[in-house]
Image 1: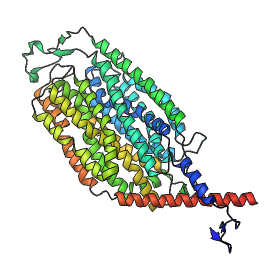
Image 2: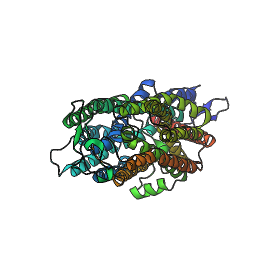
Image 3: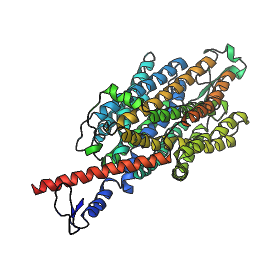
Image 4: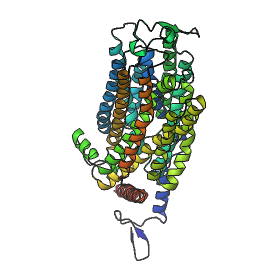
Amino acid sequence: MARGEGGEQYSATSLLPAKPGQDEFKDQKREPRRDHLSICSKICFAIGGAPYQITGSALGFFLQIYLLDVAQLDPFWASIILFVGRAWDAVTDPVVGFLVSRSEWTRFGRMMPWILISTPFAVMTYFMIWFVPPVEEGKVIWYLVFYCLFQSLQTCFHVPYSALTMFISSDQKERDSATAYRMTVEVLGTVLGTAIQGQIVGGAIAPCLRSELDTLNWSDLNSTQLGLEVNVSGISLNDTKQAYMIASGVIVIVYVLCAIVLFVGVKEQEESGRLKADRRLSFFEGMRMVIGFGPYIKLVMGFLFTSLAFMLLEGNLALFCTYTLGLRNDFQNVLLAIMLSGTLSIPFWQWFLSRFGKKTAVYFGITWATPFMIAVILVEPNIIVAYVVAVASGVSVAAAFLLPWSMLPDVVDDFKVQNPDTQGHEAIFYSFYVFFTKFASGVSLGVSTLSLDFAGYVTRACTQPDRVNFTLKMLVAPAPVVLIILGLIIFKTYPIDEKRRQGNRKVLQELRDSDQDSQTDSTELGNMV
């Protein structure tokens, strides 16, 4: 703005006297509209993250034991299903991320149509995962096909939803606040998924099979000798199958309701002007640009190892509690204790990262669980120790949930500052992070189930050989601890500290203000004409 001889202000484009206080009024009016999020909007946005975590916790905690003891698949084929399904899921993430970034803007936004269309197909395929087909020879193909289909369809929901973080507000504090709401609801989602699946299924546990008078050596045991069914409760295997289907039906209903709340309650904002992409990159150009961005790779690789650690713990905890700790009738309650502890810890970690910084929160949050992981295999197993370790581990689980999604927007902002002419690739950033975490999940499930096969896991047995118990101990303690240490070493090189993050925030805000002022001046000039 320029000043005339009388001190009046002139617009640089219109050269007309500006009304006193006009710019101040525009700024005050504009800021709440684009940046401020109401509590209702944050809650609706957060609820949209629940379906992914509800289904993820049910699959993560129970699919392995379901395939082995209910569907009665050979451990080798179960490991193939788990690994291929998660690997396929991982591959689809960057593809969907690219397709989302190339999507045209609609009156519902760019992300919302993906979420809306994928939901009905995702819930149908999820339900079929928990159905045992009557054909024995086709079980492996059945589970592999529906597992891969569900993972692909859920990717069409989760990748756009994750990228939606960048389109609900342009203010870092508002996004961090919305992310905290989201993480709280997502941990509640894991609690809900664990509670629904665990409590319904826990009331109809499949009867185990005991060797004849428990006098046979495990090395000499075969399927004909493993014939005495222990079924003092009167519950049959068909009752267990039905319980899994009932649990999946309840989860499907919750999934659909959460998607509806997200669609109705969240307004997606369209980037404009200088913050829009000047050109559309091809898939491989976008991939090279994202993968070649140093801060992003360091963040993703650090959390890749820590995520793999917690996924190993998650995927084997049900079997560990059932066989190694001897808590067959209580394992679902131990899992629930972990999730409840994590839910209650989310507000603490949100305060901690805002007070001491996100990198400090990573070191404290991720390492908190390691002593308890070690303690659970050293202390004589009992129910009290199991619950203490569960509650303590839940604190680290909360940090592992919150921190990656709180730090990814910082990396995207840093990329925008360094590459101002190539914007609009938020979905690719998020999809590749999800790709790496899902690939880690596939590796952890595949390797752990295959390890149990090599150790001599016996389907539906009341007890397992010593080699299996030893393998389970390694999978829930030493292996995760080593992975956590490797992840923190990599994370030490992560360059975005609080000073750099605040600097990026200031630069981006100046760009937005400049762009909005330019648009306002252009509008005034058009009105004159």
